[in-house]
Image 1: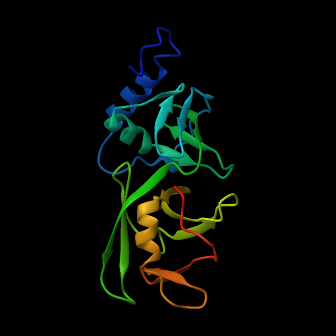
Image 2: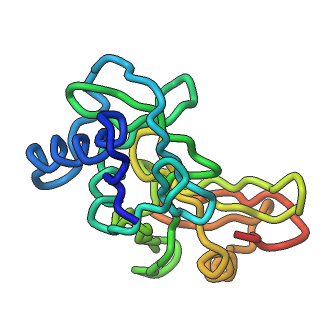
Length: 196
């Protein structure tokens, strides 16, 4: 499936956004928090719970395009997630979190250890005061679901396999927590591990 094969101006919107972003791409993430473009509505972008990006119901299968779009995501105080360029802001429907934390590395030794995560879009994020962990409990399953702040208000849901690694590092405090970057992130009581 080609993301641009819709035969009308609205269908070419995804390709136009990609071209606009590519022209301005450089090192690091663009300063989307400082941009205030007009709101241009919903063009059919969504991020499923498994991290799959879709355009009008069809998966976007080009990893470079997904990484490019991920670099200009922003979650505003209204709780909505947007793809933001200097010229426009469009809705992105997010099923859970916009990113997944798919890999974790431990550096240092307690109590000075640091956890470094890699996301499904290749952001490398050191957990600490600027990138805290938070733990939620799934209301349906009772599972612990860890989230890592990646940038702004955007979070990565820690995948099930990495959640098991993470919980194995829990320190025996009251309550139990995970240490990283000089912070103890408390884990709520939950009967089971994450189900993602």
